[in-house]
Image (cartoon, rainbow, N blue to C red; front, top):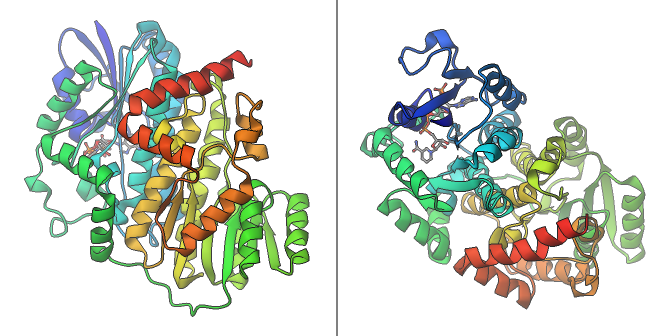
Length: 510
Ligand SMILES: NC(=O)c1ccc[n+]([C@@H]2O[C@H](COP(=O)([O-])OP(=O)(O)OC[C@H]3O[C@@H](n4cnc5c(N)ncnc54)[C@H](OP(=O)(O)O)[C@@H]3O)[C@@H](O)[C@H]2O)c1
């Protein structure tokens, strides 16, 4: 008998999956947030239904305790299906809504996978992440949703390499489906007629078919496969069309002396960017947590004849942001915003404490989304301000040994693409490879070839020129460009390479 756990089993695709898996050969574990007495289907019994709200930070513990109480010690199939969304202007989505969405769609699947790894490992089981075809195209009206699903894909891709031979990891992307989700996220039928979408039962059948084939990733349905192909390969045609048709975010500030806001500006790439933009005549507003390094960078800029102010604080928490924001308002408007601050956590996913991995998601993904939303909401930007998002070459290559870092950077790149469609100014996404900074030294499995890493000044210069030229993507350096193309065309090959170059070295070094 196979034990199958499905999250979000009370409605839509999850319910249809539960109905189709409900055979004598399977033992179902159905997870939902609704109270048990409110469920009318005979599928839900005290032995099958586990109530857990995935918007709560303890959801993984609740599920693990429920499984233990039921005497379930192995798991053959774990389907992360629960999902939520938000439809509307990126500037109107509150920070609570951003956090809720990221918690349900990203944090909870990661936490549950972390917690249930021993059960999956015992069964040599399979874990499935339900993503969406929306990850292949910019989605200006559900940018955070797209980012959450892309982050999930980035996580799954790296985890697949780490868990090869132990647990099968799959990503499945349905397209638009006739479920209650559209209404729940605030869409109306005038905006989107979901009645014409395929029913959940049909999509669930296609998902089960894909699960049985165990392919690393599957897009459900021919039309969606085509959409994904166009979204991935025709971005230079598609994105300008979407940009023209999307409702545009506006800001009423008059352009002032050019001011550049840089997160993590005290050290590494951020410091190099601060120096480069100051050299070009920008007034620098740096955000950082390190007072000593911030003072040094400030002094260096001033010694060059530039102007800089630092706001000190912890961007990775809502409390930190709440102290930073009031200090930013008097320094606005910003003509350029560079989301650079980032950390990593390296090691096999199941071996790195979850709290450390969540901290990575908070600084690398939540913080830029929060800050961007607040800059729009508080009208702190010039009318055509540029945004620069520091993603990573892992977007093309995967990053086994830092699966959650990869998730954060893939999510960020997807968000930037959606923002680019919704904003009159430019959004540049940068995909750097190894850079000669303390960050690289701290997280790399092998520092013997430090000289091969790109100097931060070279990267900062390339970013400055790409941003000024209004480019939307930058893979800096010919070797990285080659790797980016190879990763796009032959993802499997790159993953094998990354396993050898990163994961095996990381483990050899322990
Ligand atoms: N529908 C589409 O067009 C479409 C397209 C691509 C991908 N997807 C993805 O497919 C998956 C299923 O979507 P769907 O269309 O079936 O949506 P749905 O009908 O709204 O069902 C979503 C399920 O997730 C549950 N859920 C939401 N928030 C939760 C929380 N905080 N804790 C626990 N459970 C929670 C819902 O519970 P309630 O019953 O209490 O609401 C429901 O059981 C999602 O991951 C979605 O992103 C959907």
